[in-house]
Length: 132
Picture 1 (cartoon, rainbow, N blue to C red):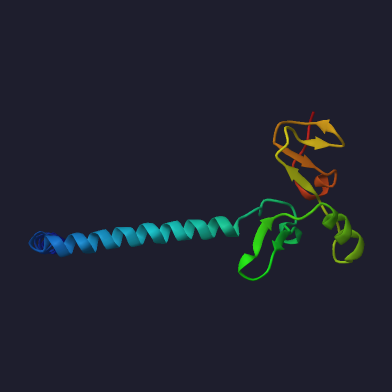
Picture 2: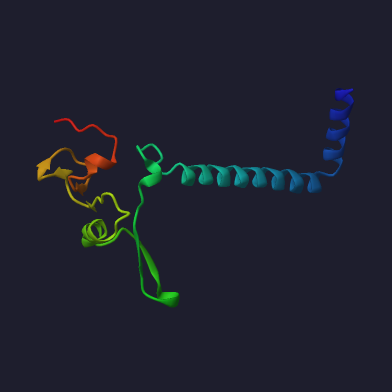
């Protein structure tokens, strides 16, 4: 019975080559785009979810400018961490990072070459063990 279905489908595909190619191309492109969207959503939902207390860790972005000239930058100036920890009671701790450097520094001791400067409070945030 399935053999007859496949024979009939193949004959229809062969008989209508142009429309069959359009349908097969559309189906394959649609599936590929759907899979890519699902992978992107999964990546966005799993961003930094491996940290302890990931639901209590937030990243600050800066919104600069107004109207159509508004820009969103990743991060904020360093004093924002100190100010928010001091002035906002809901903030338990704050961590500052600075990129584009030649090593990771905690209290000015070089650890490795991850191109970031870290504040000492990173130990409270991230579940990584630091060994010398």
